[in-house]
Image (cartoon, rainbow, N blue to C red):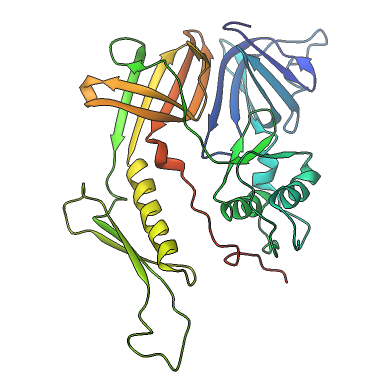
Length: 346
C-alpha cells in the first residue's frame, strides 16, 4: 500500500482520513491508534461517522503493517469551516489491561496452560516465545486483579515480558534486540531528534539485603543476614540504595537482583527520540526491539541503541516514524521465585 492507509470499522472501509497515528511500545501490551477524518454526509443527510461507535471493531492497514482492535473514543468537532471526527482506540489485548481475570486456581500446570486459560475468555491466544520453564506447583489470582496483572505476575516468574504483536495477539517472551544495518545519523536521515539523560533514578551503589528466617538458636555467626552489592562507577556522589528482598534468597539470587537493578536503572536513564521520514528503513518497517547505530555528534552519541517504541504517522506532510530508543538492558526482566507471589486464593 506504499504510503497510504486503509481503515475499516465493523468491516466497512471509512473514507476521508486526514491524519493517523499508530503507536507500539515495549511498555504497553496494546497498540494504540488515533485517526482524524473529515466529516462527510451520507445520502440520508446524516454524518458519515455515526456508524462508528465506541466498541466498534477496527482494522488498519498502512504500508506493510497492520493493526486489529476496537474503538475506545469518538470525538466529533464542528466549526464554521469544517467538520471533523477523531477516533481513537487500542488493540484487542486492551481488554486484558482493563478487565478482571477469572478462573483458577491452577496446580501443576505450565506457563502456556495458565496463560491460555486466562486469555481464552477474551478470544486471545498467547504465544510463548521465551523459555517456559517447568510446571507451576500453584498459581492463583489475587482478588480484583486484571488479566494483564495476573499474566505479568505469571510471566515474571520465568523472567519474561508481555509483548504486543499488533494484530490482537500476545507474546510472552524476552525482548531480544534485533540488529539492523540502517543507522540513525544526524545530518543525514533524521528529521528531528532529542535526548534526555536523567540520573535521578541512579545510585552509587545498590545493596540488596536478604530476609533470614527467625531462628531462636542462631548465633551472631550463623544469623548473619545475606546481602549483595553492585556499584555504578558513573555516580560519584554518595547515593546508596538499599533494597530488602521480598523473601529469603541465597547470595547468588541477591547478587542477580542487585546487578539487574543497576542495569535497568542505568539503561533507562538515557532516552533518545528520533523522527525519520517514512515508515520503513532499508530492511523493512521500523518496529520495537530493533537495534541500530545512532550517530548524533551534537549529542555526543555514537552507540547502538534499541527501539523501544514506534509511532507511525500520516498527515498532510506525508509519512513519518517517531522512534524512542534506549540501551538494550532497559527492558531486562528478572525472574521472581515461584513461591513469591503465587496469588490470594488458596
